[in-house]
Image 1: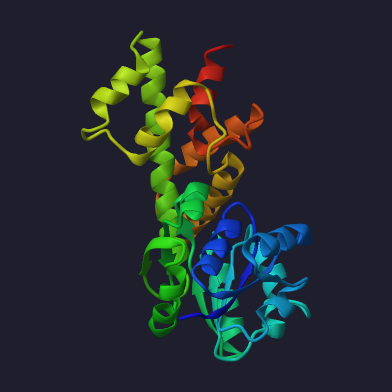
Image 2 (image 1 turned 30 degrees about the vertical axis):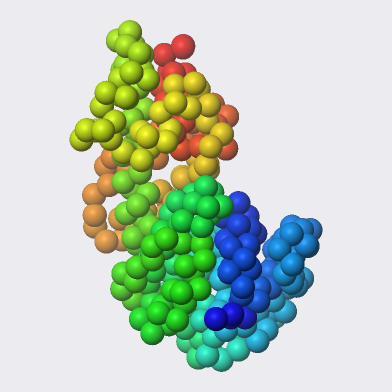
Length: 293
């Protein structure tokens, strides 16, 4: 069934996600801070675009957002030209941005004043997952609203799950990033050790990948890591934003994230050598740089 939706934020994730919604037959209106990108999207997918969030969300049943951070989310939602100035009562507002759980709850409270359900729904799968329509969605919010949004989100996701009240999706995304950070650092150290030991890195990974050491990161990133190529997927700058959110939450809930804090500092080292836009597998570049001194 075709649904009238808006999609706000056409970055490397949002652009293809909105495209999948249009390809699935939905009526899609987009908004992007840089308007030319919205114009290009509308031309490519035969959709509509508007110059403000308020205009884009008018009469929409579902509104999706995928912007940069907490402040970006607030700038899109609030104000006289924001989402809440134009969204209709009874609509569902779904945020795919990775933010703090705090801002998710804040926006949910404001949306509820206008009888709008809010779902925090960060995603995992990276740019490739967005382009191929196989993202994982981690959601927090009202179950009835989630069940209405889920079939529409299926246009760009292969799995979505409601994990609790508003904020639970963001908390799950924090867990996701915590786990990735540790795995990538372990892989970087393993490949670094293999090189220093005089082993053939590719043969080593071919040998261990199907056993207990195997991971998505190993399967998809080891060749580019060994080649010193770090232009694939999620950037270090974005990862540091996400880990910062997780570390802030850990200070609030009393959890211990010693490894995460350490890897976050290692990513700061990658930024210091000019790798802020490298993908997250570039922890190996840090080790290589250390041993070139």
